[in-house]
Image 1 (tube, rainbow, N blue to C red):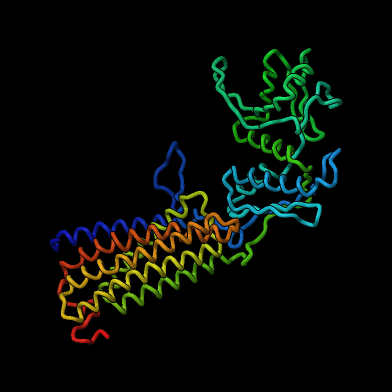
Image 2: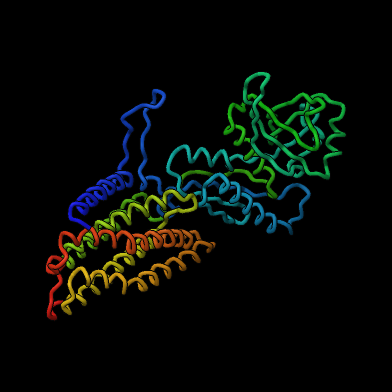
Length: 438
C-alpha cells in the first residue's frame, strides 16, 4: 500500500469515527424541518434499554381474588397462570424487562423496567393498570348477561377502511369460544341493542343487525376509538379482565433503581475511567501500535453500542455492564497478544512488518478461541430465566462478534495502513532488538 493511499484511508476512517462517536454520544436537533416540524436525534447510549436495577421501574400491585364459584384449592394454579399472562401482555408490547411475583399472600406485584419517559408509564397503565371484566347484555342494567370474560377466545384491536365514508374505522375485534357460538347467536337472534360493560360501567352499546355477531365474532365500536392506540388500550383492559383471577389495583407508582437514582451515571463514569486507563496503558506500552489499537477500540465501542441499542431484546442491567467490561478486556487482550508476539519476533532480528504479519497469523487461533468461548457462554446465558444473566448473555454474545471483526479485520487493515509510514523502526512501537524487549 502506498503512503498516499494510507493517508487517504486514515482520513476516511477518522471521519467515520467522528460520525460514529457523534451518533453514539451526542443528542441534537436536526437543522432542518420536516413538514414544518423540528425533530431531534437521540444517540445510541440514550437508546440503550436499562434493566430495573439501574433504570427506573414502574410497579403495580393487585389484589388477586378468586372468581365467584372457583374453589380455594385452585388458587395457586390460577395465580401462576394469571402472573404468566400479565407478563406476556406487557412483553408483547415491547417491554421485555418484566418481573411478576406473589406479594403478601393474596396479591400480585408486577414491575416493568426501562421506564424512561412519562409516555412509557402511561403505556403500562393502559396495558395492565385498570383490568375490568367485560360482559354483554341485552338490557341496559346488565341483568342476565349472555356472555362474559370466560366466554371469549381472543381480543385484538382492529381497523379497516370504509370506502363509503372515506374514513378508517377503529374498534376491538372479539371472538367468542366456538362452543358458545350457537348460544350467543340464539340470545341475540331477536335483534335490538347489545350493551357492553367493563366492570360495572357501561362502555358502549351497539345496535344489532344481521352482521353484528357472525360466527361468534363481534366488532366492538365506540366514539372513544379515535385511533389504533385507543382501541388497543381497551383491548388490553379486556385481556387483563379475562385473566383467571380477578385483579384490583391497590397501589402503583415509579420505583427508583436498585443501585440508586444516579447509579447509571456512576456506572458510566466507572466504565469510562476503565476505558481511559486501558487507552493510556496501550499507548505507553506500544506507542504507535497503541494509538492504532485505541483507534480500533473506539470503533469496537461505537459498533457495539449501535447493535446493543438496536436489538429489542437487549436490556442493560448491572450484569450487562459487567459483560461489557469483560468483552472489552478480551478485545484488549487480543490486541496485546498480537503486539507481544510481534515484539518476540522483532527481538529475534525479524523486520517489523514481517513480525506484525507473523504475529497476526499466530494469534488467529487464540483470538477465535477467546471470543467464541465468550460467545458460547453468552448464548447460553441468553436463555436463562434470570434477567441479570440474560442481559449478561446478550452483551457478551453481541460484543464477541464485534471483537472478532475488529481484531481480525480492522486491526489487519490499520496495521497495513500504518506500515507505509514505518515498516522498519520498531522503537516507534516500543520494540527493541537483542533481548531488550524482555
